[in-house]
Image (cartoon, helix red, strand yellow):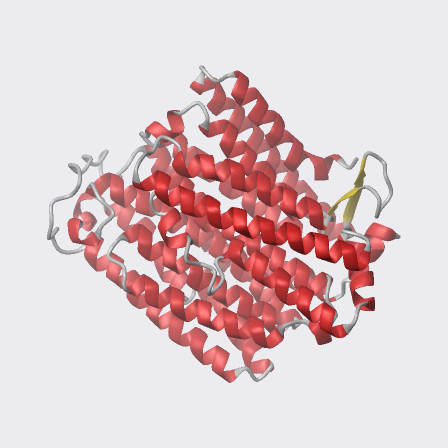
Length: 497
């Protein structure tokens, strides 16, 4: 087995097992988690370099040749996603270690966190539809534990909503896998790419829509997002940041992979993708505007930003898919940064409700800067990374003459800027209208939070700025990834020979 493909999955699993053994030793658990996540990040970077240089990296688990065995494969898209995910997992772990929190001191935190990492990595490198289902189940079980860990009452109730909806989606996915297997006789993605093309056109279209809806639940796509705004904001800040920034993008990745690899051009649900993507943008941003809590505003923006990704996929051109991949990278980094910053706001202000916040630009000016940069980036203000990614999507929309979709995306960007200014005015200007739930924590110097929390958040802010500064070569990499996606024969040849 190719070690570069195995390390991102096996290492977190081993780390989770060791962390369980060290149940009564939280300091050693933290050390294990850090070592594992650093190793995964280094491996992911090496894998991306190799894939971009040599093409697809393939491994057949147990030496069983495809399509009979379990295939692990990395192309440019999956390698990019692995690098970004590994960086986010490591950064959020540093933030969690620095946060005074009952949750991260819970002995189950580190094993569950590493299990989520293993599930995410498996989703990106699996070449098997059934094992994609398995990866989602690993993420589901561990993420439910993380959402509810150290909590009670509302957190557990909202966590139950998350797990029930996820279980229903899992049942739908398993049913879809069974139907596809019954129709084609395989679950290997490369072989499915060949055999689905032999099915009647109506069956192909039905499978394409079915997988879009199943993965749409995981991604928070309209109208399947209703579970998300209630489930994420009640979790501890590091967990909210990880889930908001990354886990929904695993669903987006699954949509991109399945629609481009499995279905011929003429049977892809283009109109449905563009319609659902546009509605997701609009409903998400209006939901954000209606909220009065920082975390809930940002949670609705998870939904809104997913709409841009689905719309970019729906254009099905190299430039559009390149801009979509760049937008996914930008959004993972930016959204995670904003949710980490919301934890700093809550730490410094004693609440996340706008009516109970105010004046943080005086008491925590560093937090104000850490919020402002990613907030402007998410709204698409030049020259930040959000502007670069959205510009690519707008140009691609003009190229395929989807004027109404472009108009909607531009309007949603303006509304996003409005909702970000709402957080800015409520949290950093003025004075609180109500008494916070707890007394604000006195700022540590002028930082506004513990050093590790500030440092990890600042690292992601710098990463977001780097995306904008390196937009040219990064877009070139995304363009090569997009070309791979729209020419699935290279993927099929790499697996089946």
